[in-house]
Image (cartoon, rainbow, N blue to C red; front, side, top):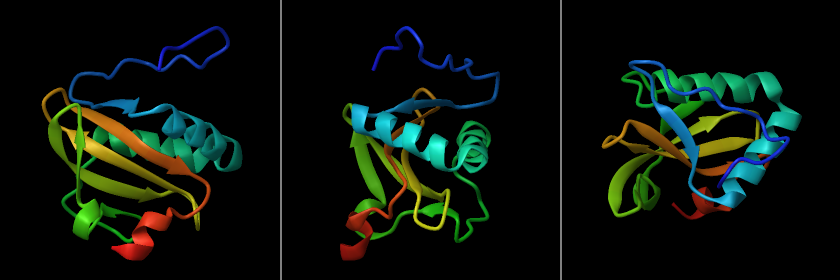
Length: 119
């Protein structure tokens, strides 16, 4: 997804930090919805992805997904898939791509993702 006129400018990752990118247009749209609904919590989630996307001490609000959702593939690279609970129902799912230290947001939304109901 290319940035265009009027889009927010994202800063580049500082040394030792991870890039955060959208895996698809639906994730970018969901991100904007989360930003409108819970600006501060979405910002905190972005900081977490930049600084510590795979924490050793998982919590109920930030953890690796389980079962068939624990892994995903982005551009041929197998990755761990994680979740951050932004609001009661709002979630961000992302793949941790270690080749280029990039978090690929695969889902962002204000509603609870249905995929977790079957895992």
